[in-house]
Length: 94
Image (cartoon, rainbow, N blue to C red; front, side, top):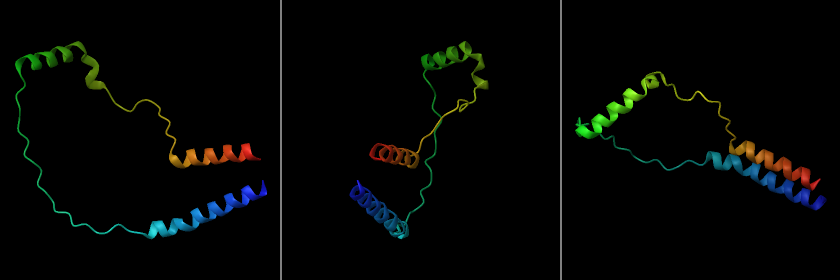
């Protein structure tokens, strides 16, 4: 058990020691040439498709008041997941 913890401590120390090296490494500079956006052309919808859209809009009059993102979302990031996994492993090993 003690050997496993020493190996784990060495691995964690190596990982933490290499983080500044990876953070200091920069990607090579790439020259980017700006490009003008393409002109958008107005397109006419076929009559059948326009009538379909008009019928759907008439059937749902409250859609103009819709605001997205109203629900409560829970986001678990990679770091939180890694910490939770490490805690579970430590509990199982000890």
